[in-house]
Amino acid sequence: MLFLVYFLFLGTNHGHSIEVNIEQPLILSVSSKSRETVSSVVPIDREVQIHFDTEAAYDRIALFDLNPHEGTREPIYVIDQDKISESNGFVQTNVSLGNPELPHGWALHSTDLGQAGDQCLPIWAAAYKNSKIATTDCLKIRPTWMQDNRLFIGNLDVRSLLIPGTHNSGCYKRGEKISLRETIGRYILTQDQSVWNQLVYGIRYLDFRIGYYPPKDNTSVTDDDESRFWINHDLIKVRPLAPVVGQIKKFLERTSNEVVIIDFHRFPIGFNMRQERHQALVSYLERELKEYAIPYANQPLTLDKIWTTQQRLIISYGENSVAKAKDWLWPPVKQIWGNKATTKDLEDFLAAVVTNDSFQFPETGLWALMAQLTPSPLELLFNPKGSLREMAHKVNPQLLRWCQRSEWWPKLRIVATDFFLETDIVNLAVSANVLKGHHDKRYETD
Image (cartoon, rainbow, N blue to C red; front, side):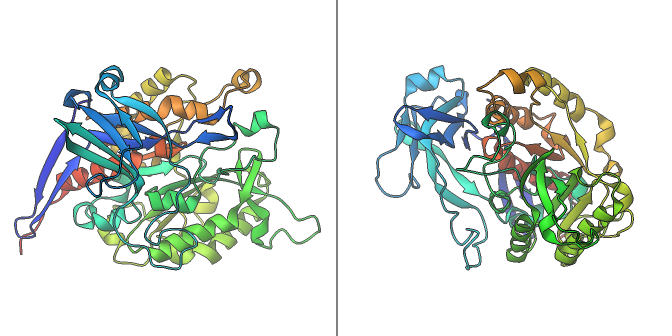
């Protein structure tokens, strides 16, 4: 792994200097896989992964449950020099992150105002040279990364940002089995974090498929009762929409400059040839979210301009005729799917998209690279051990390396992943956007 460091001094009178690393010498991520053990009926999941620069010639790498620069506690996991030499820059540990409470007021149930800035979870890594710490990293939340970097990214058009996103963002359910046959259920869940947690970790694009389920009585379908709208994975009902909308609203209320994109992308159940049900959903969204919604205009829109208003939410609606009727709804996001079954085929497809200059014009509108494998019908029927977790595990560590490429990251826009903590996409997006902002910015001296 080539380690690239960009040092920028921005603004002679402002005196703001930042060091931006597109390729970090040490990165922590969280495996999407779960595994069964003979000693426990509960599968082990969320095991920590370590990516490191193979050219750095570290003596050892160790995991800690606190900052290794503070205190004298022993490491909880150690990679010795022999394993470093054999590992090709990637090690899967058996240390589980578990489900820690988000720190410094960022838990969903917390009544505190969350602390701004990056916050470390209790998992740290330290790489050593000559028995001294050479570099460290921690697993972190980045709830205010746009606010934190506003001086460097405010000049960017929202359509040119690298936006970290999730695919089927509402399809999570950790610790419980969905009420389906297990074989099918393993191909339903795409995330293991709530939408609130996704936003706090730094995700800024949310992808939803909405189903409409009529009441059992004969209540008018024009009634926008929130209980009728569910988040689906295609034809499968996963969770009610209203609590997720509540999480999004709470996040917007507790932050000041974070811009979030919601993509109501498809409507697989209950909407076909039923325009009144679209109107019912729009009425619900209008009541709950319109005050936060950025009006649509097909023209340049920088973060600085957005921040002069109270609106920080882009709501894209997958039915264009419906979106056109409301100035606070944006046209459909163009989701770019490879529908590939192998990692190599997906890499080739994504590379072709990234190098297609027609996607680089802001006038193209919002588009999302859907960076996951697609199971075939045979995979669903005849692979009893297969799952979306397994498929994500094949792609995500590779995706991290692909997106770091110098010919990729400047051209990426929305990147939507499954089990996003395995990708480091949030940290990459922050660094990439700061560099994009530096390239485009023309600072004025005082």
